[in-house]
Image 1 (tube, one colour):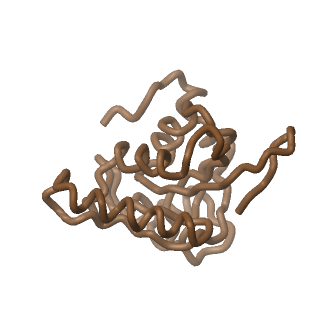
Image 2: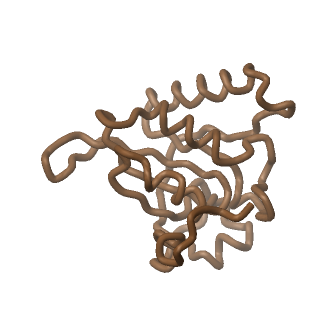
Length: 166
């Protein structure tokens, strides 16, 4: 899905889940070409979830990052490279101390090109031998994205933290 920036240039959207959305946002927000970020919930069946709803593990939603990027400055493939590096894609429903389906590894693609890029990237990584276990990252179409509460947005910046401690 494309949008345009203030100068009329086409931007693209990408959505990733890789554990706690604070750390995911911290990894992507500083990349040149990432124009905007917002953390929230997606991939589930529960309408208008709150953080407390998602923490129950019963909504089907994952904590996720939705970002807009300028493909003239950073490619979707480069974003995928960052995604794979910031978490362990072989752990099912867990990243570090965070456990539950809301912390699953997932790429929510926006269109056929992103789907193919994500599938190819996952296959290349699995075949590379970088991981002894199978990559369990879900690759699925983007669905409605529910923005998280304001106190979750840019959490690390607001609290002077560089990245996730684990």
